[in-house]
Length: 420
Figure (cartoon, rainbow, N blue to C red):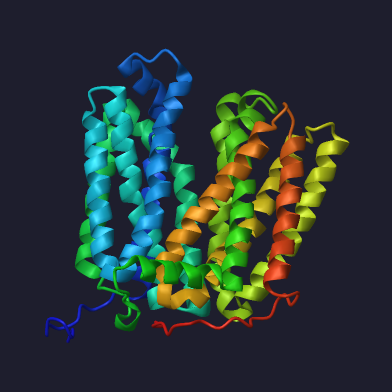
């Protein structure tokens, strides 16, 4: 029975359904970006745009809404609970997608994209809070591994899906499909997921309570350290994504139409690694698995740096792809566990924590990735230098976070969680 209504408590979904539902929520945020990428030229032609760079605003407008809203949803979900905020966010996402599909001019489309980003932020931030509410330690790492697997696979498949919709029904159908998918996920969530916020962790709505929650986040060594580690590692990934088409498609290796295949061979590795991590983390533990993977990753980035300079910036394609696949594999294992380790000690303020961590890592990753990507000079030398610097810097951050004691857990969770 729920104490407030006297009605029977809603039955929580099991482990497998929880993973699927959380993955669906997080996948919506990736779909909202990647499905429309193939449609940018068609959007420009539809609105009569002459400057192709203006089309980038379709992506940036979404990210503006997404970034700002992350900081809002977390604290509010600690006050009002997870369910209402997720539902509100999905409604905003649906409205934004519908307006995008019907937008009469480019400015209206940009406003609608901001709205989509604001809505999608709820699914991204609060989904992580729900995981932390229900699980702790290695079980939480397993859920995060499975959801990150989906989150990493979606960007590989989404452009192809968007291109198919574009060919069949035009670019507006992409946004209409996004609205329909959001409705489906929203109904699933509404029917199956109960409120997960522990009653004792519900906070009063006040500036002081929000500041207190933020203080708990920023004064926890593990949370700060692993959040910074995630941000720096994310910068490395964003550096590759930002320059991938130039490196593989049009300039460096000049693969042309084979670029999506080469890019997918690297991107899909993240999903495989997340699955492997989910199978190993309960036996090996988050610390041993993430720290060991990160040390291997540093070694691989050093090999990448050396190879880039031995071949004057362009090592053989097979070697480049092989190194990228290996680096992506160990990167994915490390960052999946770092996400869990950053949130693990913050159970009593999981909503605020996930929003602050999400906003912080997004900003660090975007700025750092832009620095790496903008250094592109026709070779992979700048990318290799960025990879080595970011990976080594992150390892130093982790060593600081753990006070020099790698591989051994010694941070305690601040809250109980339900284990399936």
